[in-house]
Length: 437
Image (cartoon, rainbow, N blue to C red; front, side):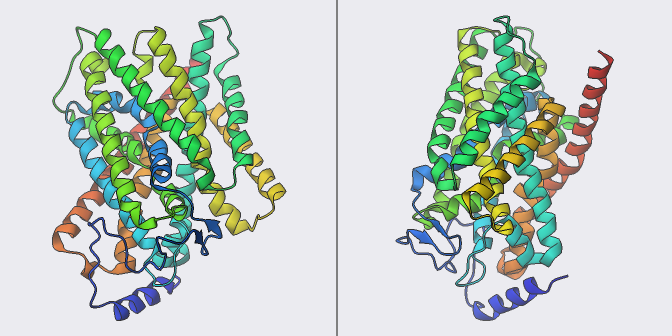
């Protein structure tokens, strides 16, 4: 294994023995040499021109997207204890979101680029390849989810108008829609307007879903305080709803005032947590254990439901380019694709491949749970903590923070293992049932 991580950690310990770095606090790393007044990031060769609201919009658009639609379904698997799981997940998001950026600045005078760089600095090549795998699985898998959901909703709307092209045809059309901004926009700061519209669309969808749930509740809905057997797979889905960790390095790299990052991630988590609790509690109250994922499949059809479906479709089509941008920025840097025609061709090939995969596995809820269990829990709960401990050393962490880290790691492992098993079983079952019919 590469000894880079060991040498750099030793060097850091020698230079900074007198400085305590509190990983749980919101304070930014003093190790960062990036000034708030800088408007260019030499490490990335990208402009730092994004303000607080731009960064906030990018983060919250990725986080709040499709995840909000399956929160009531997660409650159906866990019972009312799902509220506690949502709150805990929000705190985990605040914590690991800050740890991730701190890991980028572990070496004085230098900023790492991305999650794979953190993996290599901490554990050498093995760490890099491990992080690359889950990083790309999350980025590309989530994009597939967005295409599946958009195609599903468009087909659902147009079937009522006697236009039945089939779900897969609409997934292909959605792939073309996503491809357009992908080959036009170069970096993260340029997609802020897409993020803002996506966030507003999600808020409206949640409000509409809550209103419709109050208007058309199931009077025979059954509720449970807690359902232990359903917690692992539901945990992975809820964690997925708060995850956006892999785009954080690129969002922070675009910020004009990077020291505002802790406030960005905390604000985003508070807003998401509030909206998730709202739609989760109301949706589960209205439909109990019969609620489906996404919840729009449970709510009776009507004008508000139709508007909500249109808006969430718009949101996922806007969020997909943002999710892909993280992947493209990293891989294009590694492949040295600097000329527009080169990265345009590369991005086109990737979008075509993802569209094909999306057509092959159009089972939204099961696919969501599988991606959440495998990639999201790893990148959200596990990698930021073990990377931070490796780079800064466990001696710099207080005992109560170490206890919190252990809890977060346990949650990540439980969600990853049991969630993956349940999700794979459900996915295989759906594929077999589809063939039988």
